[in-house]
Length: 154
Image (tube, rainbow, N blue to C red; front, side):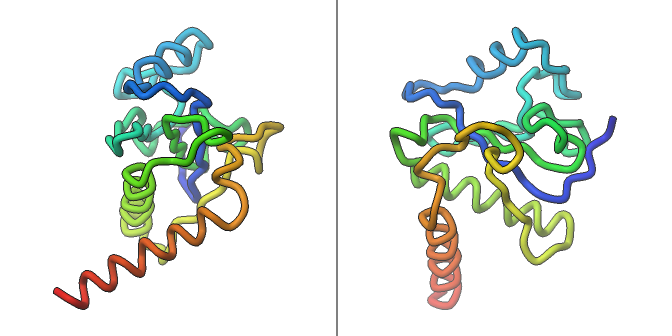
């Protein structure tokens, strides 16, 4: 089935390891028999963001995701390395997510690409306590204000 993305769903790995986690996630999803993407990965997310902000494109946007049951044909899955019940996402991860969401908004010609947390669609706490509440929206707003300020100063 083909994906027709209307919004993004944010996830975390639940793993605090500092090393890159993409290969570990890809192997875990292969073990769980997730379908292989057109890029050859088993990772269920369309994008995976390491702690240093590196963005790995694991699935084409038109590939059906394997990240949120019932929403895999109408969303973009974004997984972030880390356990956000115990740590905060890195600034590099926040910057990468913001840039990715801006790019998705431009691609789909919408003012803002909606974002949901995985727990909205499943009985899970994902993406963790440090994503819940007001911290995330305030960070995104501050990030956008900083970008506007840089543009105006330039």
